Length: 165
Image (cartoon, rainbow, N blue to C red):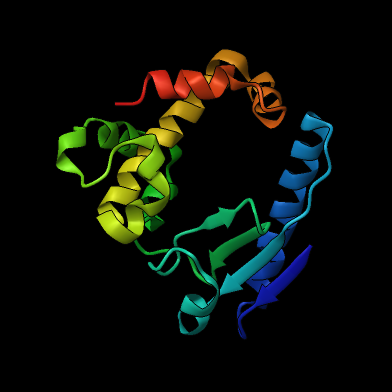
């Protein structure tokens, strides 16, 4: 794992790096497939140079490049929500109540362009739905769902698509 850290964020990068390595090792063991990634812990001054999501501090990853980008400090938007996981999930469930007609893009095929073309609220709408879909898959199948997705089995992706608005 390569780590790119903004000056002054070394302590946070160390903590996040340890957590990311633990998660990677657990997932690699569960999926019986090693993988690597590069961790970027950035301040606002260099965020735009490396991040794919324009809003500062919104964590994101690119599976093609293996890049995980995090803010050198937590995103202020989610500070209070993330401190209480039940509140966060309630937020996600409420986000799922927003009808597709209220966002610029709602089809799964449009998700990648939703933040650029539909704005941050559209991006959050997709994320809420994905988080709830992931929770449902985990509750029903646990790690088997991860293994099936990693193996390219379409059953779980089709389940998400069936329940998509």
